[in-house]
Image (cartoon, rainbow over the protein chains, first blue to last red):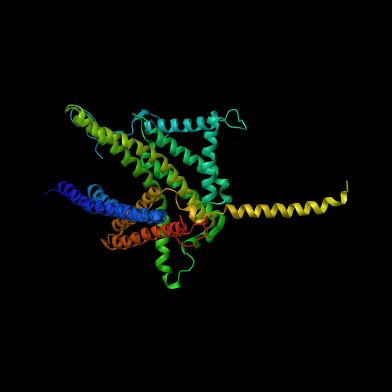
Length: 75
Length: 253
Length: 118
């Protein structure tokens, strides 16, 4: 297998990790919705932590993108 | 990235980012060609200058609609500087205002059909970010002299941890311009690419009795609204982070 | 008109001006709460990009230094660890400022996150 084909296959495989990212983001917002549903007054307090959690999960998605781009264009 | 044409001579979704030369100008070996990026930057500059000067012509005490728009923008930035830098930051108001208005104008002009988004070029965003970074570092050295290096050792760190903390602090300081420029570039490029990708689905799907073409059309409408919001938000985030870095340089030790 | 009253009035005026200026400075001092960005989505994107930029820049530095010196994975791994540390430290600094701001509500004067009553 030549290097070019291996790079493309590797980049495609690297993006598989985004499935976990989708599950993580859904988890965060589902727990936010259920906690606000139980206690609407707590919405303001929980909102900050929700955005922080979203940022960290999004960072994992960007890591996967970084590795895919690294495989395609650097090696 | 390859911008290959698809099908019968159309363009891929990345074609919108190609920089084309219009007028070749070579001055002593330096290539100062007028490109479409330069034209749209001129347009953004003229737009900002027109916005702030033409509308304030009469300088009425009770502002009319347009003048009050300019005043609201002025107060928005002035409040942001006062909240993030303190009262010493008023000297840097022209710089932050110019930065914010230029990035906002470039982002918004990129939303026009057939236009070129200047801030989707990584060279432009890194240029702006490095201007801010180098400027803030020089300001820090001018204000604190050599003591500016004390910024890299936060207070309350035990002595034996210092050789571990200092390289990490230096690294995270050097990363600031990269993250500043990368954020603006990535948001705008990803947004515009997604717009073109979804727009490219409309015609092929619409060829099947038109109705299936409405789905990507709705997605494009939603994405355009999101892109307007992101255009404003990214300009605001860039300006706020510049103010925060300025505050760190002026006061953090 | 009694000219003898003017000098004490003026010196008092200077003190009052200085006191008023001091009060305005104190009111305008930036507090950690406002320094955190207003929009949640903006802060989230900022954190994500900072973590990735930290890792990307340090790995890039590691690859470049290894290209120069030829010590194959050593500097890549060192800078990888440093990049992860730098990214997490940036996130921690941003988050600690934000959570202090969101937990302390100056309007109600309560120091914890509870909102009594309504």
